[in-house]
Image (cartoon, rainbow, N blue to C red):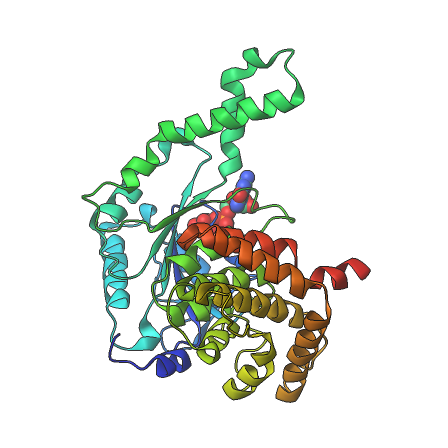
Length: 404
Ligand SMILES: Nc1nc2c(ncn2[C@@H]2O[C@H](COP(=O)(O)OP(=O)(O)OP(=O)(O)O)[C@@H](O)[C@H]2O)c(=O)[nH]1
Ligand SMILES: [Mg+2]
């Protein structure tokens, strides 16, 4: 990977490729639909890009024939390509070997278009006595996933609640509603620990070891989302261009953009830097700007937000203040009206946002907060947390959405 220029990589990774695995009925398709914000079924293509009739795929799965190399794409979000393991526990040893071969080939592929970028392994929680079955054991023990991050997804997590309730029902008599919820939640945690699943997944002998863990619940309900899975996957990726590719599939997930931009800020906070690269690297995380506005233009438009140095401010203070101001402005600009195709219009949206910010009392608030954060000398994760807390509580876009 080191031999490929970042720019070429960005151009070549046009779509984010995920392999989703897990037993039949684990909730895989439901997750993919949530991620793509649809209730439709995906379109299925073979490796040559030829569309396959969904009915044919279905009937061959029934006969125990499933081709893991088939690509699934949802019309609502073609930025993703999914591969489905389709409950391989029911399949033969040959099917398992095919899956292993597929992962190994795609994890070490020389053609960029063949790479898979992440693996989501779904483990359902609706039967806590059987969380780690033969299929999980085989996958985690034997599959070499190379540099591809595996995210373990505990699906149907709410199913642990009735088990927890059943166990402590008697102790809940006469207890206040608040106390009941607390005790049930504690029992759920105990039950989860008792399954031993985390220890199984972290076994040092495993070839595939999850980089992160996500709990999902009520995914079959309308008002839920998969944002935690997308965030966890984003931060499990080592490569910044891949991260950027995943974030750009999430046009309406501004919170994720903000978190990535803060990670850039934190990374630069205690380094030497130049403002131009810095603000541009922050702007890269906002998909509404991506490819629609030239690098030089974005640098010029954001320039008024840079904090000039003085004898009384440290470099870290200047970086933090400029970074916070830039993120707040870019988030706000995503809500301003602009036609998606015209670059001047995107530019003018950012210009208006800068103008609005500079005339608002937020300038003074940001100055104070940056100074205070610097005084407390936070670093790394702690610094990121403080900044996130501030930005989420002070979005300028709140004024727009509140007015509606
Ligand atoms: N209670 C609950 N049910 C869920 C959840 N997610 C999915 N389901 C339900 O579980 C069932 C199986 O979901 P699918 O998404 O089809 O599972 P799958 O892993 O794709 O199954 P196969 O395609 O057969 O391998 C469906 O009835 C879903 O509505 C959840 O978070 N909670
Ligand atoms: Mg399915």
